Length: 113
Image (tube, rainbow, N blue to C red; front, side, top):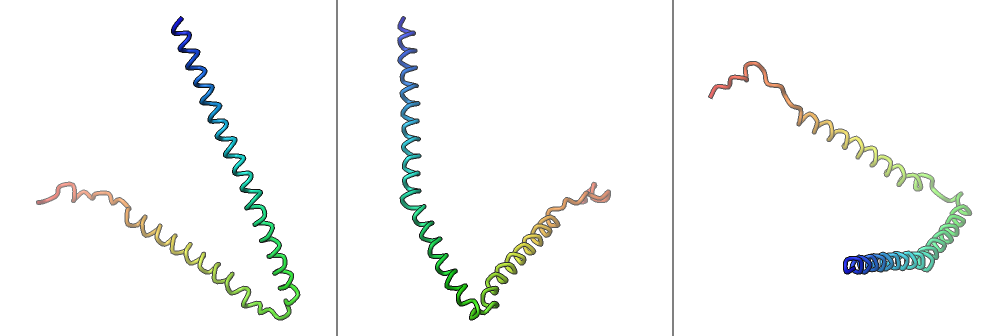
């Protein structure tokens, strides 16, 4: 009878612990949702609105824009990515060459000391 009582108490403790974990996860989810709607969503809306206003202003004055000034940062970024990719390939091939195992020749099987 005592074993049954202790097993019931243990089962009750397990259910209680699962409920506490569930309450903790629900509380975390509610907090994350509130943070999203209180901070993240308004910041995204404000940023989109500011981007729209700036884009509208640029579109109005597009005839005065220097196209090279706009494309220079993009071109610099692309060139840098290509350079980094080439250097990365070069490093990989040099590491492969460095760690190539050389099979011993017949003359090196009997080393002389």
